[in-house]
Each structure stands twice: as structure tokens, then as C-alpha cells.
Image 1 (tube, helix red, strand yellow):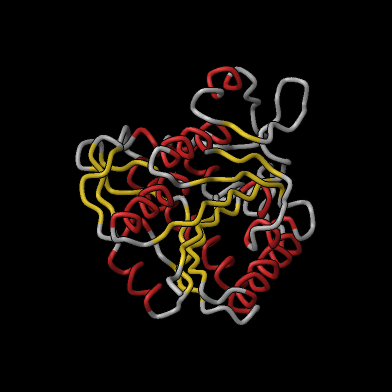
Image 2 (tube, rainbow, N blue to C red):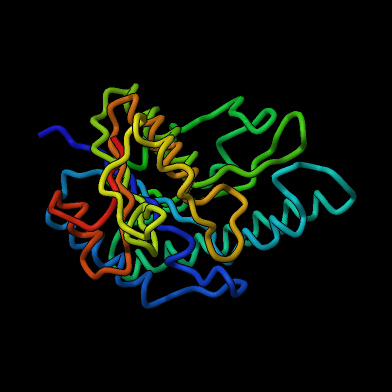
Amino acid sequence: MKKKLTLIKLGGSIITDKEVFMSLRKATLSRLVGEIASARQENPQQMLIIGHGQGGFAHVPATKYQTMAGFINEESRLGMAVVQDTAATLNRLVVHEFIKHELPAVSFYASNTIVADQREKLHFCPDVVKEYLDKDLLPITCGDVLVDRQQGCTIWSTEKILAFLADYFLQQGVKVNKIVHVTEVAGFLDKQGQLVPEITAKTWPKFRQDLRHTRGFDVTGGMGLKIEESLNLAKLGIESVIISGMLKNNLYWALTNQDCVGTTIR
């Protein structure tokens, strides 16, 4: 059986408290990792790439130092280092939780494989991720601060990194099953607060005006970015689903192709 690839984004808003600096929601993270472990055990032919948001970790110094804008003042280089260090700190905590569940998780940092130019990709070497998957390892990436040839540095969201990986593996002939975005909300909610079960390129302009501001810090775009990136992937035939990670077993259901609570983008 040919292996399929599923990509999972654990939102920073669900694994951290975005309003408290460097506060990890350990119990929630542990439960979600347990659901991933159960799904992997049920379907060992499914390859997984995990990404996680930064939530109350790297978004805070990224906002303080305006890291997205690059080297804009004398503090910018130190700011880049602080943001990268904070992002890596959360990544190691996430990887450690996977290892506690006896999953062979390994860190993958975009800052080591991507060079940007005015916030867009200039060079990208994903070969190490392919080798990890070929050897049945579980690569875990995260939003990261990159070297930028023009502006010194910039930030790439987890969504953007996962989208590039999905496109790369699709071009390599790998069947990309879907991308699952795990959030603290049920999915995309309209202005009445009702769950929208499906969004397409045709219906998105109508729903875009219903976007709500997320709590806490988020320098990378929040829900709007998730949907924009997902619509771009839909053009390649890759389905995305935004689900609530607060509902027990919802992630497990999404990974095992059962009915789950969320919004599908296709």
C-alpha cells in the first residue's frame, strides 16, 4: 500500500495560553499527542508531519522587536536571536511530549533550511524532512524566524511552512491526504457564531468579513491566514480541515477519516 502524508498543525492558542508568556497547556498537549499516537497505531502506513504554533511563546518577543519587519533598529539582531530561542524552547517541549508517548519525534527548524528574500522563499532544502519520513521518524516543525536577504530577517508561520512541504511532497509523487489545523474553536464561525462546515474559493469572499480577532499575540495572521493558505492548497487538490482540539477525540476522528467537528476547505 502506498503511504499517504497527513500534515497536522497544533495551534498556538490551544497548546499555550496566548495571554501568559511561555505558559504551556501541558494537559491539553498531552491529550492531543495521545490522539495522534492512537491514530498512528491504527494506521502505520500514514506518514505524519507535525507543526505547531507559537502562541504565548515566540509571538511575544516577535511583537516587541517587530521581527517580521526585519533589521529596523539596533535591537533587531538581538530580537531575532530571542525570537528564535523562544520558538525552539516551545518546540523542544512539544517534541518531548511526543517522545513521552513513545513516538520517534525529531525537531525540524525552517530557519535551518529556508532563506527568504523580502519575506518570500529564495532557497528551500526540504531533503532532511524526506529522509526523516523515509526512516519512519516524525518531524516536528514550528513557526520560525528566517534569514532574509533583503531585510535581514522575517517570520514564517507554521501554516506557510506546512504549505510549502505539502506542495514539495506532492511534486515528489507523494499522496498528500490533508492538512489538519487544530484550534481552540470549533472551526470557522460566521458572524452569528455558527460553525461553517465548508469553505471554497467561491464562498470565501462572503465569509471573509466575518473574521474575528484572536486573543493574545499573533504576528502571522491567525484564522484568516489558515484559510488563505488552505485555499491555495485546494487548487492543488489538497484538502484542509480546521477542527476544535478542545473536543476529546476530535483530532483522532479527523486523522482516522471519521466525522469530526470542524470546517473543511476544499
